[in-house]
Image (cartoon, rainbow, N blue to C red; front, side, top):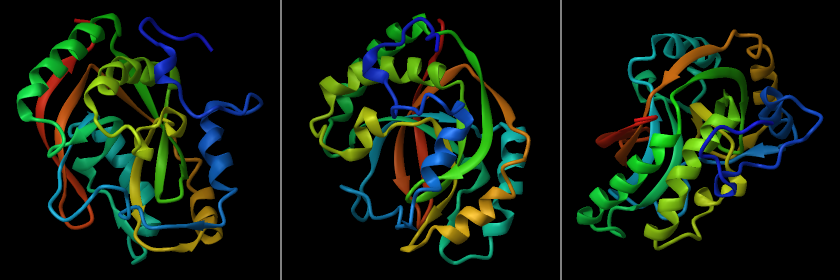
Length: 238
């Protein structure tokens, strides 16, 4: 794999299976699961708590939203899943810190460093599809992996110096694989029926989305959905 300018080891992803194409990676891992758990039982999240995150957001990506709506159809009537609102589709790059762990006054410095580093990462086109899942979600794969890793590397280098709790499992680089979730599991449930549902949807053609910036947001939970307030947008390649 050839990595774009700006990629460093700190942005590495889940170790892939060399014999599998990247669009099959998530599917391969998902089919090994015996059960799903609740996505909402995540470390550190308590009632009313908020978090600073770097995200790719897709509020105006009509092609991606249409693809997500089609893929959500079989799960809309299942109480075990919470569908992601179409205007809340996102790709998580990195959590910075919970808002009570990092003073708001430090964010301009964080953003300034990330903005400088992202000058070396060119805008790119993201291909989203190949429905699969994880232990807590149904999700699309986002390719090319290397381009997302380039962005993540720029952000992660700064986050490692500002996040006082690097023990959070969703911050660990070895757990990262670029994805966009369309539904979250809200309970423990067997994986096999979900695998069957997803398998018939994997033929859906992927959507293409331009990526020109990343967003630093204040992330919150509203019921069983994520919402956010954009604090800064950092342009790529500028």
